[in-house]
Image (cartoon, rainbow, N blue to C red):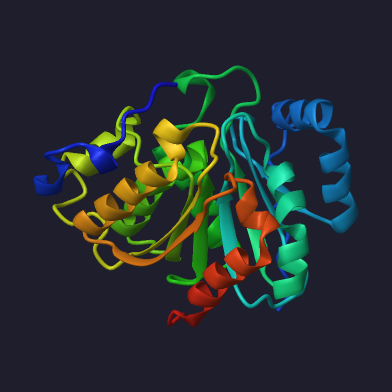
Length: 275
């Protein structure tokens, strides 16, 4: 998927308690996407089963939302949009040590359909947000209580998901953390954001944090120079830029592998006023 980067294009600046289990959908379609995960990453699926994750499969059977918390009343929740061709269960496993250490819960969105690559193999931002919103309301989440986290392609999509959250009135997210993915202009929802369809300040009253690695495998799309452009773009569209974390010798995976980076982000998130 080719990506242009809205954050660096000239002209866009002026366009102006127990954790409840989430019930699975009934019927044969439910098995399809979860079966693909089982076949692709059996160890991660087994790990999720062992710790007791809850899965909510979408009505069409193509996607699912996975949730888990180490404690009945976590200090906060992170909502994760995985990278391209990645699985929600992989993010659960990667985040698990941090979740236990910081007593934070996770909501991981499986937005890749599990086969192939390219735009047709991923859910659009409006579908992602529709399913997330339904899951979050089912869980009883409050406005301004969650941290939205996207990595790679998930980070590119997080811009539109944040705009949809703000525009819909749900406003679940206290902040958005973008890890190695700028505001891709070939995503239809991102174009809507840039063209003013969510207002001239689509990120007004939103908070943003950014991470980049100096050795990212896709520097033209997710390197630190590109991410600084994304940082500035979020600010131009009205967002409040709270933090920019750079790991010169690392890549996007370095974020979760480096406790000081994770703690800097989580400390900032937990410092924001929340209900």
